[in-house]
Structures are given as structure tokens and as C-alpha cells.
Length: 397
Image (cartoon, rainbow, N blue to C red):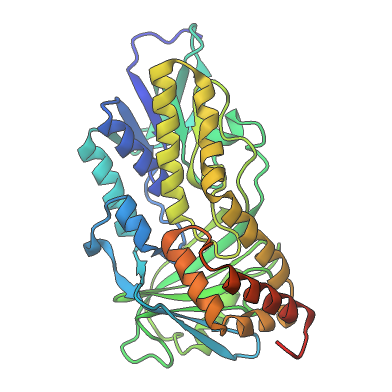
């Protein structure tokens, strides 16, 4: 098909969440002509937790934090609780509506052309170049641009991935739903500096539910991959049991969250995936913002290398680089989810295990630094034996 007299971009980034906005910013700062295409009007359901490392690595100002959580509380099926204070650190909490928009604006200030619209499809011109079709917000006409490279950052059910990447049409997901509520001034048990995580089969048969503070608001959410399980009913139950039923509901949001990284992120020519589209959400925790932004940066680096060298094989380096840095963490978390989230008996033991000082210390160190802690092999050995004891139900643990 012939496509003449249309605008050409070095890179078209499809999706303006943390991953796409980060990729667009990095490439624009390198002097590339970038189009950031985001459909707008959507806020991902998310607890909004970001580690201090994210703020350092991506130059995030503290003013974007809605609150700082200095502890977490794990709630077992029996309602037994374990508090996990963060010694010398914090978990930053952001409102995705504010945070994502700030990232998109930063991309625009860096030089990216920002456009609100929905991706439609990709065709090829006479040179086999990518022609990206989209519909701009408020305009029913189909528009198109030429792209030397395309980054797909359009979410867990990425249309770009479905159309262009092998395996991109078969993504297993957890479905997440949350309600943003007005935080109570004197809520029964609510703490504006604590993240509450509920490991209870009645609230989620295969994941967990949460209450995360966002300053004046709070995120009350749940995730599950089980078909037929009512996420809305679970949240209604959770709000009633935590005396949050009467709090004003500001908005409700739901979306799929990928369960594991795709086996392939690029088409071998001019397209590479990032963020949820690539499946980079941590198992067990469901944490995605940090990994999405890392994935966006890695995708941008791979695209830049391909543009400079003319060698499309550079795109495959994005997945290899990500998995080299974070694959082991994802593997460990995947095993943890497989074993501990299986039934309430195991969830009870898991929460009990979280009371262990070694578990708490290494957990927070790993979270803050986004890597497994290797400096204390004795602590890891103690955790291993305690972990096995809890799993087997031994009384000595």
C-alpha cells in the first residue's frame, strides 16, 4: 500500500502510562522525533506504591507523593495481624491520575509530540516501513503517521502486541479492581502511614486485597485471576469489615494485570514492547510502576541502538537486559505466590512467617533496592529453613 505525504517520526510510542511516558522522555532527550500516543480517559487500578529507588533513578520529585507509608500490616485469614515497620525507609504512595499525567507532561517538555488518541493498527508502505493508524480524541477520522520504530506500551491487553508480536495475543492476567475513597479522619483501624494487605481467601482466592493510603484518599482494591469471582463484592465486604463502608467513593477502576513476562517483546524489525504490554508486573506483589518505568527505559535504549546502528537485532536486547536484572526476583516471587497463595491454611502460615525479623529486614531491603539481598547468607539460610517449616506445618517454626 502506498502512503505518501505523511509525517514521519523516529519513534511512535503507543501508550502514555509510566512505561510509555518514560520511553518517550528518554528518546526525546536524545534528540529523537517522538510521538507519544495515549488514548486518555483511563486510570489504571493500582495501589500506587513506588520505592525510593524509583524516585532516584527517574528523578521523581517528592511533591508527587500523596503520602509516605512507613509500615505494612499483613492480615491473615484468621484476622491475625503482623506489622512490618520500615526501618529507615518508606514506601512512596502516588495517585496514578496525577503521577501518570506528570510523566506525560515531562515527555512533552522534553520534546515529544503528545497526542490523545486510540491506536488502530499498523500497515506497511512500499518500503515496508510501519504506518501507524490511530483516531485522535474528538475526531472520527482515521489518521496515520510513518514510524521508523514503534514502542508498544498500551497495557496488558496490548492491541499492538496482538497484531505484531508472536504470543502477544495470549496473555494470562490477574484482574484488578479498586475504589478510591475519601480517607477517614478517624477510621477504625485505618492508618494514613500504613499499607494493609489482606491474605484471605474470601477476599481473593489466589491473590490479595489491599488498603493503601494516598493522603486525603485511599485505594481499596483486590486482584484475582479466578473466573466468576466478584471483585466488587469482595471490595464491598472489605469496606464493611474495616469500617470504610460510609466513606465517599471518588472513582472506581478495573483492568487486567499480566501474570508473567511475554517470551518475546519484539518483531525483529521495528517494534518492541514495554511495561504491562511486555508483562513486567512482579508476581506475588503485583508491583508494576517501577518495573514499567525500567522496561520503558530499556526499550528506549534498545530502540536508540537500533536507530544508530541500523541493526534491528538490538531490539531483542530489551528483554534480555530486563530479565538479566530482574528475572531472578520475578522467579522467586512467582514461586512464593504459587506456594503461599494456594489456600487459607498456607496464607495463615505465610502471614505468621512475616513476623520473623530476618524476613522483614531482607524484604524491605530488597524492596527499597529492587534486587535480591545477597550480603547476608546466614539470614537467607535461616529464612529457608523457617520457610520450609511453615510450609510443612512443623510445630518447631
